Amino acid sequence: MARDTTFTPTLLGRSARVTLVTLLLTGLAYPLLVTGLAQLLFPARAGGSLVEDGKGLVVGSELVGQGFTAPGYLWPRPSAAGDTGWDPMASGGSNLGPTSAKLRVRVVAEVERLRRENPAAPGPVPVELVTTSGSGLDPHLSPAAARWQAPRIATARGLAPDRVLAVIDETTEGRDLGFLGEPRVNVLLVNLALDRRFGAVTDGGGTPGQASTR
Image (cartoon, rainbow, N blue to C red; front, side, top):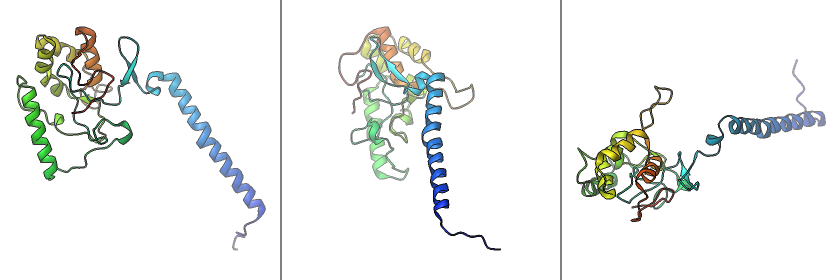
């Protein structure tokens, strides 16, 4: 026997009630519950993982990279987010593949620049320092890429390289839960640690909390 599928006012009322309940549960109650639990259990993370400097001023987020160009700071990997990079409103990669001539030209130019500006750096230029991340806002580097820059930072600050390496080692983050991901360093946190220990760099090119491009 075929079911009666005639559209009636009763059916319309039931549909409206189901829609309203679903909207309230999934569009209001559930987001409020999750947001409330996050604020209660992980307030710093829920608030954006904001980072403060020594004066208590918010200078950025642990989750969003910034550009640094002053020789006394750790430099991040390049950014393709926005026209000049590091634009959080235009997160994205360069979309250049391994066979791209444009990518090859840019990488060669970056390698030459990094070698010129890091004459005492050990070994070849780390690949991550000449390639952009998928988001263009990656806040991390591998410990190897950070340590590669230590001689330049030490020279700019008038320090022994071992003192810069010690800061990098102290701020290196391990694998999540001991086995997920790889060890890494947060560029902003390293630069803030350098400023706290050795004083701020005043020769321009981006201070912690002030993104710049090159």
